[in-house]
Length: 541
Image (cartoon, rainbow, N blue to C red; front, side, top):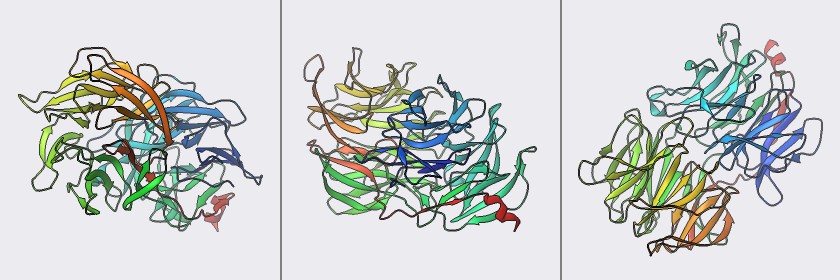
C-alpha cells in the first residue's frame, strides 16, 4: 500500500467492504486520494484530488466525497474528474445517505449542514445546544434518515459526547461518551474508542437506542490529532479495518524561507492552531488544547528566550488571538458565556481578561489597526455563509459597525500596515478569493487572487500581500497602496505549504522573507493496517 501522509481520517472502507480509500502522498509529495482493493497488491491514486482530506463513500460504493480547496466535492472512483458540490471552508467530516443527502461539517465552529449529493445550497442539519462549539464527524445509520455525530462542547463535557441526529429534525439525542470523535455503525453495533480500545456496543435500529453492554474488539488502536480521531473503519457487511500503534498527534511550528526550505523550528510539537506573530517579531501566539483535548487555551512563545508560556486559563475555549500594534495587548475570543465573545488582556499576562464585545453571535478577531483605534472581526451569520466583517472602535460607545456584509460571506479581514486598506476573503465569485477595499470606505475593491485564495497576510512595509491558493501554494503579490487607487502587480507562487490546525496556520516575518507555518508532525514509520472479515462473529465465541 502506498505510504499515507498525516492527513486526518486516513482510511475508510467502502460500504460493500471491497475497497479502502485513504489520503496518501503522490510521488511529488502532494496529498491526494488513493484506492486500495482488498484483493489487489497495489494502490491506485485518484487524479484530480490534490489536497484532499477526509474522504467518505456513497452508499453504492461508486463515489467518494471529500474536501479540498475550500469545497465539498465528489468523484467517481471508476474514473472522471471531481465535481464540486458546495463551499466548505474547512473539513470536519461528511456522510452520504441512501436518499442522496450529504451531511457534513464545513467549519470547526458550526453545526452540521446538509446538501444534495448533486450539489446545491446547504441548509442546517443540526443546531448547536448551549455550551456547544461545533458538530463534526457524521456517520449515517442503515435507515438513511438517522446519523451519529460528535459534539464539541469544550471543557464542560465528560468525555467526547456522541449524539443521534435525524434528517427530519435539527435536534439531537445524546447516546454515549467516547474517547475519540469518530463513530461508525456495523453489524448491529456502534463502534467507538474507549481509551485505546475499540469497543462495539449493540444498537437497536428500531428503537434507535443502545441495547446492551459494550465489548472490546481491538486493542491499542492508533489515534491521530487532538481532539483524537481513531484510525479505524467498518462496513455494514462486517469488514473492519484499523491501525494499531502509538498516537500520531500534534504539529510543529517551522520556519521556511521563500523557496520553501526549512530554516528552523520553534519549541516542541503540540496541537497548534491560530498562529499570529507579534508586530515587533519577538513573540508568537497560538492556541492549543488541554491534555484531554477539550478546552483550548492561548499560549505565547517568546522567540528571544525560547520559552512557551500559557496566556489564558479559563475552562472554556480561547482561540483566535491578535496583537496590538505595540505588541503589548492581545484580543482573543472565548465561548465561556455560550458564544465566542471578544476579550482583551495585557500580553505580559499581568492583568485579568476584559470583555470587549459580547452578544449572541460567534465572533473571531482578525486584525488590529496600526493606529490602535479599531479591530476587525468576523461575525458568523448563518449556515450558508461564513459571515460578515465588522469593525469594533475602541472609542465612543464601542458599537460594532459593518465593513463588508453581503449574502456571499466574507472573513479574514487584515489591515494594511498604513491602515488605509483591508485585505479580506469573499465568496461572491462562487469560490473564495482575496480582495482589497479602502478603509473605512466607501470605495471600490480590487481582486488579488485569480483562481481561489484564502488567509491574506501583509508584508510589514505594505509592498506585498501573501495568501494561500486553492492548490495550497503560498502566493506573493506585489501591491502599492500609497496613492488614492490601489495597484496590484505581479503574483509569484512561492511554495506549497503543508498545513495543520484550523484557521490561520501561518504568518510572515516583518521583512517578508520567512514564513512560520504550523506543519504536520512527521511520522517516523507507518504501521500496518489490520483487516478483519466478519468481525462480529468473534463476539459470539
